Image (tube, rainbow, N blue to C red; front, side, top):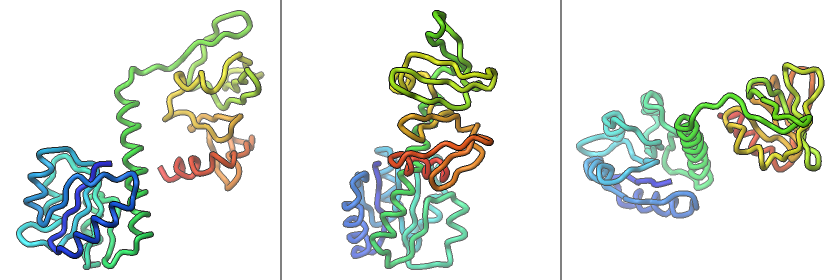
Length: 234
């Protein structure tokens, strides 16, 4: 993620730059002493994330962010607690009060990363042609499967069982999850186990180790738990 750091205090700006350098997914493209300098930098290149102080001469951090037509993700870093409510009216990612512990800073950065990835995935999905079905080889025929008809899928060996709303019995197809990836939109389906994928709309409850589809309980694989937690947060 391309980011910019803005603070009128040289020591605070230096500490901010150092913290940013410790986060591997951040790329600091500019550091500025005031909002006017930052405005010039952001006109010259796109920025995904802004770290900015609030109390600055000429133009405050709040005024600067409010003035932007196309707003990047924003994390405020300030010595003043009283602007927190006003800052969240600008839909900022986080509000950090100086001095900021490194672990708290990194947590805010990960929150920004999750939002950035969600926004990017949404843009990609929006730009793709809308498809509501695909065809599979089953029972010596090309069988049409409508995306909204799928409840969940179970893979075993070279086959996948499709559990469908419209059928009493699962449809068995010779394919794999790897081959299905190009057919299943990521905003509609989700892997919860090496052998299971579910329709997000069909999920009725999530516990620590299980996902429920109505009365059916499916185990969450150990390597997929972090992804499930991200899904819940989003």
